[in-house]
Length: 312
Image (tube, rainbow, N blue to C red; front, top):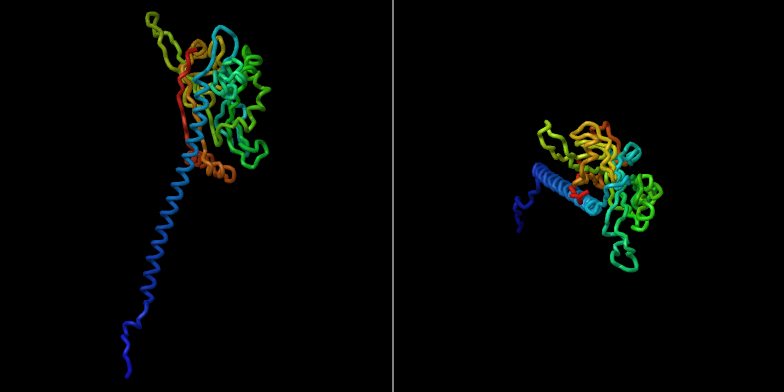
């Protein structure tokens, strides 16, 4: 006796069914790949921003602490602060910072004597140190000649004893610090990397005469940026015991008015490029300057902090 099989059980997939299944699978895989790519891109960007924020905070906090304990004295011809736009902007092969400032001033830094304030074996009683900040393009670990050059901002704090013996009373801080420039460049003084540009804006309170003889003088705040900026700009700003010297032109105040003014605050501004941005800048070229600016805008982060200063 023959068993008759159900013809439905012998039926397979038709070509049309296979094509539809493949099309659906392709769509699902494409969507998953797209979602994964977006998620990875978002994660990488968030990671880069978090790292840049951490570096920017470390840099700005360190500089803010030094400025908060800024030391100046009136009634002498000595320099107490020197902020000069870098003559040669750090960088190489067409990748150069657009703004950098060489900064030297006196401060009652809390990390003097290697942070051992009050230790009778380390603290020799000095309370004023000379500190310097400078931006360079080098390997943050290996130094000059390394394979991973980037924009590095260093901080060098002189010992209070050296400050007292060789710096206090100097009429030109930059010249006095020249022999210590190699110390500033050492990797041990590293503070922050990927700092594409770094600028300082000094807020000076200026007294200007009234519109007529009977009008009282007016106090105004004049922001002076050393380097490039949207406010009144100067190539250098120097504080001496005789007042503030700034080579300004135009703006809300003259050089004479600034000299008699009072420094009230400092605004620190830094632009930090992500690690991805630095890697790309090392290896790629841009069709024009606009494309380069767009790339930097997308892959850099700006941080600023306004620091109130002790009375001059």
